[in-house]
Amino acid sequence: MINKLKSELLNFGLKFISLDEKIVRMFLETKPTNINEIVILPAIKIVMKKIVQKLQEKRVYGRVYNGLLNGVRVSVIRSLVGCPNCAITVECLKRCKTKTIIRVDFCGGIEGSKDVNVGDVLVPKLSYCDDGTSPQYIRAHTELLTQLKSISNPITKFQNLITGNHTVFISKPNEQLANLLLNEGQTMFPNRVKNVDFWTTDALFCESFDFINALKTLNVQGIDMESSILFLLGSLYNLKTASILSVSDLPGHPQYDMLHSNELHPDMENGIDNAIKILIKALPRIKSDLT
Image 1 (cartoon, rainbow, N blue to C red):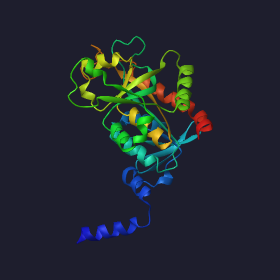
Image 2: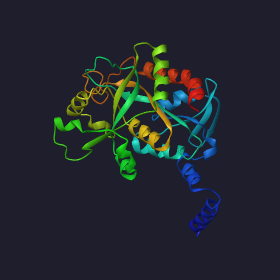
Image 3: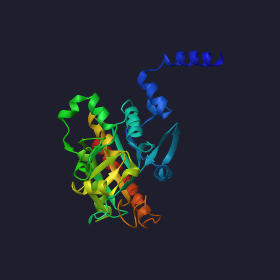
């Protein structure tokens, strides 16, 4: 009886809000009007905490932290890890007044790369969509097939591909936004900020030597778990998106592979601090040029 009464009261309340507002309230625990035009999107707790600590005039609305960074009003929302979580967050943001989404977090590098080291800050110029979420959006929005380039999965050069993405599509960030972050970063930290190709995967614990060798054939230098769907949905929903990521480890490296070694590189935390500094410094330009 009590559950039935609760359900009836909830359904009565839902009559007074739109479907879009219901979705935002369901996942972000606030109303759409509480989310700003510029959204910063970390995935893990430590990065979220670092950014929130820098907010001035902080206000909390459910899962959304609002405030000022370098005089620019932003919302900070933790997407959680992986493309499904990121996609849900972007689906909410497209139903708000958000125009620009910047992902800032950690990423992996590639062992053996001469150009990328732990602590470097990477701005992806593209991401290969080897996740499970992007193909579902491409299936649902077939117009993307004519807009996106694709390749055959390079893992087939090293092993039989029993399942997974035989065709891997390529998504790209907003070029102007990515260049603003890159130029600001290279001014602040010369030789430590790089523009590279990324590979996005769902399976953190499946980064085998065959997998790493396959990425090397494409000159991929960064690996993450969210950028592909962020860029894809940015293009689909006319949102300006980009990522600025700090290298936490080098999969395949004998000493600094996070999954196979207990040793952390001394530059690991410096890298994410630098990525956040770059983003904050670039925010006034991002606001004036892109919103």
